[in-house]
Image (cartoon, rainbow, N blue to C red; front, side, top):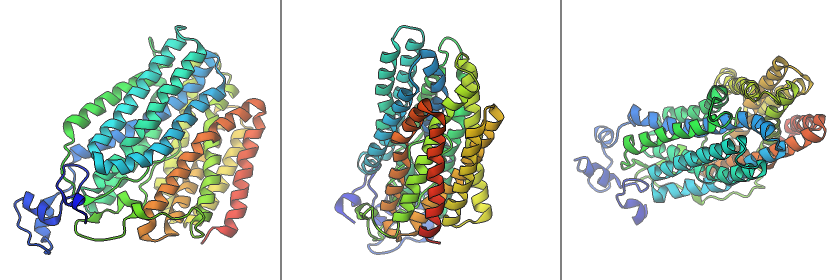
Length: 472
């Protein structure tokens, strides 16, 4: 352990065993191992009140983003802005998230986990609030449509650039303060908060459309919700000394029908104080590493297919149900379809996978097959029930595929390489949302079948190629 790590610090630096024990009134001779009683007295599990605050920090980040995704197609119609520009605004945010999230994950050790959570929550509040105000002014004619979306894209950068600081800091905060038996439960709960947020956002969005804010209401109100979470974070979460060294894993860009799960990265397997092991942050595997390359290719193909489907669904619902002139009805219909899809994803990841005990390869192949059927049903449907059924089946398939790809890549490498492969997985997951949704919307406007043909071809290729290349 380096001298820097041995220095007592209330946030990112872990004390030695002797320092931790002395701080609690226990004498720990040099080189000795604390007794079970002393160890439990050094640090107990995180109190439920603090876990609730961490839960809310994760939930609000995901819910606000997916709520916005269900309202923007209606806003684009009312402002008469091209659908592609709306998708590009999300692409810009996703691009920033992919590049900044790893930086914040590393910085939390030096700047403190609570400080990074505060920064991320502030970025979320400012982004949602300023985006909401820009759209509100544009909807009421105070700003031109072009200027409205320029400002919207600029303010979205606050979410992609700074909002990404909170999730890795939350994971590192928990991992550094819990032992192995407590950590699994705590990190699973935090992952469920991110997943629950993707469900809540679209489900409540249409209830938040009311005068005087109208379609900008969900954004402004989620900013206010964020202020409440920030107050609870500042008041109720102390920056106490951690038990373990830990770094938060890199989170994927939050999007509807994409449920976050705890990964096997560095944040989930911290080192007990005084135990030496290879530092995962120092392991740098080449992208062409033959052990994990097939899984990364599967993640790249399937991730882009899902991102395209998700990017076009809101516009598809608006157009096929004839809701261009009914913004409130469009938000409700889009939110309902996305809510159904998110619930199907939850069913797959929290129900089917544990119940069926599917291998990674089986999850990828069966999930891709179900997603293909769902995409075909969605493409062929012209009413709410057909679209929602097809989207739900596709989401169920992608809900099986994504954990399979993640687990397959993780199992392909050694334990000390988990941090690096987790970062690569997160990069692929987030990178899929940079260009794919905008490309899908662009094709949808040119020739609608082209979008679904592209998704179907990608999934068929993944099934045929995956049967031969993915390790059983």
